[in-house]
Image 1 (cartoon, rainbow, N blue to C red):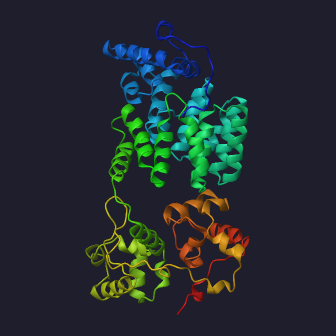
Image 2: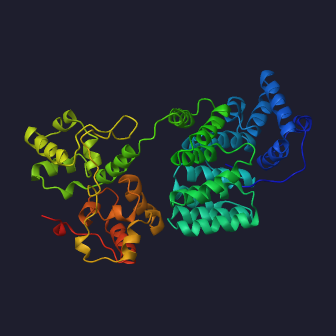
Amino acid sequence: MMTEAVATPPISPAAFFAAPPATPRALVAARHAVLADSLNADKFRSAVAEARQANNASLAALGSWVTGEYTKSLQFVDGTDEMATFLRGASLLELGQSVAAADALKGAHTASDEILVATALEALVAARDFDGFIAARQKAKLGALDALYFEAVEAEVEGDYPGAVAGYRAVLAEDENHIAARFRMAYRLDLMGQDREAISEYEVLLQQRPIPSSALINLGILYEDRNDFEKACGCFGAVLRRDPSNPRARLYFKDAHESLDMYYDEDLERKEDKLMQILRTPISDFELSVRARNCLANMDIRTLGDLVSRSEIELLEFKNFGETSLNEIKRVLTQKGLRLGLRREDGSFIVPDEFEGGPDGAELDLEWLGEIGDEQREALELQISSLSLSVRCHRALVERLNLQRVGDILRYTEEDLLAMPNFGITSLNELQNKLEEFGLRLRKAKELRN
C-alpha cells in the first residue's frame, strides 16, 4: 500500500505508453493521474490489455500495476532494478503475501526513491518483522510526511496505540490523501473497538483508484459484523473482480452471500456469545486430579476452549492420559453443557444442544476484589487494546488467549499467565500496573474458590 497520493495533471494512455514512468515515485504519480477520470481509466485498461496480448512485458507490468491487476503485473515484471523491485514487492504486498513482499524488497529501504523506501518499510511491518522495521527505519531516507507517518507506525508497533492514532491524524492533517495513514488509522480504530469511526475512515478509501484490497476486505468484515451482508458482498466482490484467486475474499464472499438469506436466530446468537465467554475460562478454575491437570498442561490446554477443541482420541493418545482422566474431564464439561470435539475445521465452535447459556453461566466472580464500584465495572468492559500494553503482552492476551475485554483477563490467575510461553514477570508486572489504575488486580492461585 502506497504512502502518498501524488497529485499530477491528467495523463492519457498514449502519453503513458509513449514515455512510461522511470521511477516508482513517477509511477505512483502516473497512477493517480491516469485513474482520476473514469473514461480515461477505461481507455487505459484497454491499452494495458493490448500490451499483455502483444507480450510487451515492460508496459504490461507497469500498466497492470497501475490498474490494480497485481497478479498480472507479477507475471510480466522482469529485472532487478528499482522499478522491477518495486513492482514485484508492491504487488505481493497488495496481494497479502507480506513475507514474500518483504523478501522481494530486502535492502530497498536504502534506495534513492522515497516510494520504494516506504514500500520496503511497509512490507516489513506487514510481515511482522518489527525488529527489522525499526532497524531499517533508522537508515531510511524519507520525506518529512512519510517520516512522520512511520514514526506513528513505530509507536503502534511498540504498543502505543493512542499515540499511533494521534500520529496518523497528524499526517492526514497535512495530507488527507495519505492512503497508508488513513488505512492504518482505520485498522487500529477497528481493533480498539471504535467500529463506527473505523468504517467511516475505510469508506474514505473507497474514493481511491484502485481501491486498496486490504481496505475492501477489512471494511467488508465490519459490514458483515453489522449484518449488512449486501455491502459486505460488494466489498469482497470488488476484490475478486480484480483478483479472482484471492483466498480471503473468496471465503468471506461465500459466507456473506450465504448470510443474505439466513434466518436470524437471536437465541442462537445469545448462546454463541455466552459460549465464547465460557470457553475462555481457565482450566485452573476446575477441581481436577493432579494427573489430569498435569496432562492438560503438557498438552498446552489452558482454557475450556483449548479442551473442547480436542477429541477423545487425541486426549487418550497422550502419554499417561487414561480413561479415568478422560471421564473426569467429561464430567466437568457435562456440568457446563459442553463436550469434547466442538471445534469445527474453520476454527468456529459448535453450540451443543444441551448448552443453555444461561445469564449466570459465565459471569465472573470478583470476590477476591471485595466490593467494586461503577468505575471498576465500566473498566471491565474496556477493550484490552485501550490499555496500551507492550506488543509482547498484548499478543499474549489477544492473540494467544483470544481475549477481548479487560474483564476477560481477570478469569486468569497470575500463575496461569506466567505459565504461558513468552509471558514473563515483566509482562505480568506491566499488566498488573495497568489494572491497578482501574482499581483491579489479578487473583492468585490460592484465592481460587474451593
